[in-house]
Image 1 (cartoon, rainbow, N blue to C red):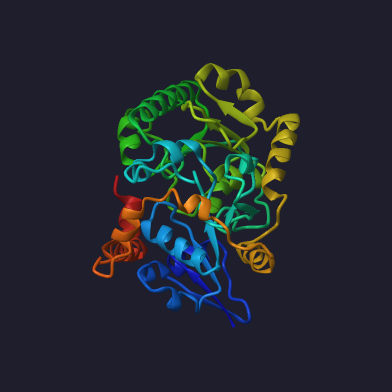
Image 2 (cartoon, rainbow, N blue to C red):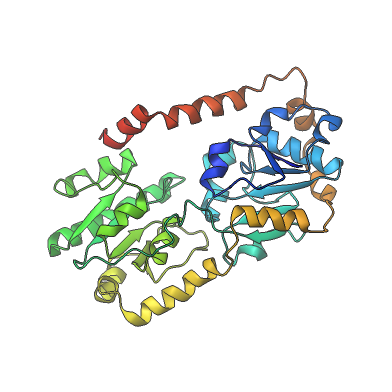
Amino acid sequence: MLKILFSESEEFYRDLGLIDIKNHQYIFDGMKLYNKDYDSLRNYDLFICAFYTLPHNTILTIKFNEINKKTVLVCDGIVDISNSLNNPMVKKYNLTQFFPIIQDYFVFPYNKENFLFNEHVSIIHYMPHRIISQKKKLPIPSEKKILITTANTAYFNENEYSNLIVLLKEILSYFNNEKILYSIRLFDKKILNDISNLIKNIKNDIDKPFEDTLLDYSSVISTPSSIVITSMYHNRSVGQLIYRDTPQLIQSGWLFPNLNVLKNSFFDFSNLNIERMTIQEKILNGYLKSNDTLNSAISKIIKDKKTTDNKHIINHINQQQFNMVNSVFNFNIEYFIRKAYNKLKRNKFIQWIRLRVK
């Protein structure tokens, strides 16, 4: 029986598409084992984690490396450079997300980002189940309608927020003046408050999962997000809002850095111009080129003959921090806080409130 230790919750990995396999035993919430000795960890054949900044994952990675067990970092969405550089939850650790990667393998949705990561990590591409959960492509509605949405976290500093709001206000004003048919799908209360005077009679379409919502729309305008892939997969014309100075890794058929660019290309965008949609499909194929699921990616890692050898990176980790987090007297409060928060998020009543409170 092959024993795989997952650092995070079972729900997290099931949402990425993990399924049970014969002769494979999964153990979840492994981050709480960070202060176990090497002999205890030898019982596991593979260590998989997803939260890059979590100190417990760093400690476990180092320990598994020391006993020559393979380690894996899984990314649940697209790689976003602004997220890596500017996310306050990353910066508080004085880290740059994914730079460096100390695990042996990095599993993430395909793009051309391979060149960004250190040469010692092996890259395996997969498509998380939550990005494309409906394999049958959704029909295009007969009535042309645009959905304006954003990533769950669309900005990481005030400059990004300010730029995004200016761009959104310009587009919304234009759509309202031209009587263009559209709805929004926004959960961010700060954004909703700042654009409230422009969306008084506009539906905020947040009651259904994204792919079910997509049935009513022929085009999508979004900030960089994994839903760009979802929308392209279902043959919607997709335009991304550009309001940052960081490299744009995820691509789509249209890019909208300002209102003039949108106006100039709006006819082609709203009418799903065939030539541009063909280009967009080729962009999408870059993500679909690898048909690996999370399970097949894990299987490749298990079969790979590579031996773990990341000591050159581990040497850069502050030994004092290692000793502090690894102390047997350290109460693992972060683990329990995360567990409590995730349970709260799953509560149906809390979900109902989050969807309906303005």
